[in-house]
Amino acid sequence: MTSRIRIGIVDDHPLLRQGVASTLARVKDFEVVEQGGSADEAQSIAERLQPDVLLMDVNMPGDTFAAVRAISVAQPTVKVLMLTVSESEDDVYAALEAGAHGYVLKGISGPDLVQAVRNVAAGEVFITPQFANRVLSNLSHAREQGGRKVELTPREEDIIREVALGRTNREVADTFGLSEKTVKHHMTNVMNKLHARNRVEAVTAARQHWANERAAAISSRLPPRDEPDDDSKR
Image (cartoon, rainbow, N blue to C red; front, side, top):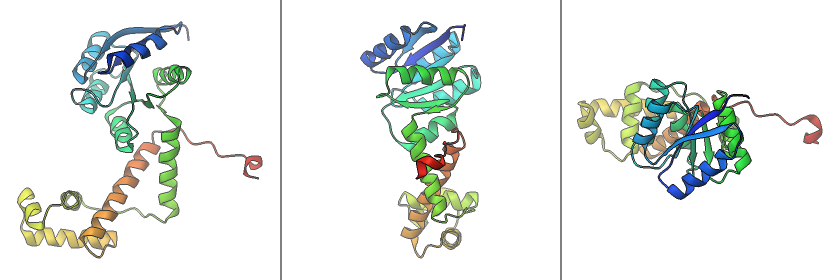
């Protein structure tokens, strides 16, 4: 690659941020154009400087995922790479759903971070390998367990999500402007679809259903995992 890769770094821990900047600045074709410490500053850097890659932490002042979404819409040439300590699959999904092109942990080695930046700058999706493997394994496990696709209506989804938060039928009814009888009807449908005998089983099954959906959404963004050859299986 002959052109320089311009990089922005946004993290609310100055010492760590400076360490990352120092590592990347030593790469011949990398240029660190600016640093920041909040979601708002990430949007400002993206708008003013339009770096090729913008490294962002997940947990910092402001709404990080909203900032990622805004950047991906307003500055689509800016590729966001999350650099974080969070090992939450929910955060991986939220980042990718918002438009991020990569997700790596702060324990990543310097050479691996450099490669991640290169991949993301080239338009590829890069996720810390152990995350990718875990998500794909979870999805494979769900399929092996005979997990079937559950089709809940939008209203049923709304109601079971409220129930999962501990809301009573009366509270759910008040939230959506429904009668308690209507909520009970929807819950009966949800339990039938999830093959649950009671509310507790319904919530447990719904959470597994959501986890499978998140895993499928993440895996759709990942490169296929290499299958071992015949020799390695022996």
